Image 1 (cartoon, chains in turn brown, purple):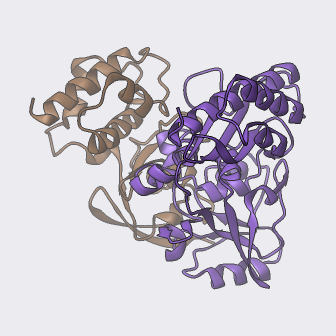
Image 2 (image 1 turned 180 degrees about the horizontal axis):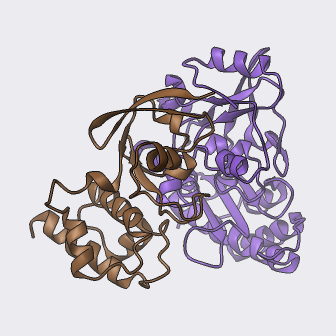
Amino acid sequence: MAVLVSTTVNGDHAEFACEPNETLLDVLRNRLALTGVKEGCGTGDCGSCSVILDGRLVCSCLVLGIEAEGRKVETVEGMAHGAELHPLQTKFIEHAALQCGVCTPGFLMAAKALLEKNPDPSEEEIRFGLAGNLCRCTGYDKIVRAVQDAAKVMRGA
Amino acid sequence: MQYAAPETTKAAVSLLAKAKGSAYVLAGGSDLLVRMKGGFIEPDLVVDIKRIKAMREVKKTASGFTIGAAVPCAELGENKALLKAWPGVVEAANLIGSKQVQGRCTMSGNLCNASPAADSVPALVAAGAKAVIQGPKGKRAVPVEQVPIGPGKTSLKKGELVESLVLPARKPRSGDAYLRFIPRSEMDIAVVSAAVNLSLDAKGVITDARVSLGAVAPTVLLVAAAARAIIGTKLDAAALDKLGAAASAACRPIDDKRGTIEFRTKVAAVLAQRAAKIAYQRAGGK
């Protein structure tokens, strides 16, 4: 039996009906049309479904949609302000830190969560911070450079 | 499937005790949801404990730390007092999965999932932690090593759930450490793991110790002989040799794709020795 859930997504109030065993990933994609969040493995190993739930980075495939009741969810769709991209998005483009793009929203959310806690991470900290996100195209180097460069911009350095 | 998110432990116990069919506790969900999706379990009822306020807190008390069953591991790493008192426990908890998983997973969940390779469990066992269990017949506290009884099996009865984990108060000159072997640098399951917790006297002689091994038996082991090997010593070479021998002797591992019996038995000794050295140094020993 479907249940009614009331939550906040990217700062906006959102309501949806879902089955109790439906994941937040499926809810975001299929019921709220937020298809920036991607399904890779569906078992919490690849990070492509990463979102920020009440300030913590999580895999939305390992969260039930019903758990979002009264919580705050942030997805990649909330990163840009209108036409103005988030510095991480700008730097991912500048550094060509993406190829097929499926992992990119997850990387952006993980990098955002990392920089919110640690505005000046070392390369090692970036690599560990992003270890839960798999990319099969780039070889990671360009992603690390993009995050380093974005961190610099965000620090105003 | 029915989902319930009670706001009190009493309500959670009542739901679990009255459940017809299969009922599961949902804390971080990083094991439960994977098993549900894989078709390994089909719960009739899932009881989410994250709305129970008391289970969301880490409390420092005169008798130690109480860690609520729904506290995500990421939060443990951000708790400076806990990190200072129990660095081994915190480092073990922060080795579970990725940042994404750490934002959700809990030590109580790690314990109740009952994997022999659970990262936080050897550290909790070495620490002498107790699990506070609530059930239809009231509250009981048991040493954490008595919770898992085999791979995927716990000693919890119907209607029971872990409410919190209690770490004892720290004696002066104490330290703990946890190490695991994995073939890569991050995001993997322990092939072998070891945790050591010890206290020293003013001269640097070990007065108390607990040694625990993971992934070398059906459950995480508390190895009393390994602790005896270093108590009364300053962790000299002879004591370390005896520690290693006792650790290897306690191993009853399996051969699998992660490691052979021979490898696990040997590496258990090496990790126990290295963890002991770190714990000794953290306790202020030289």
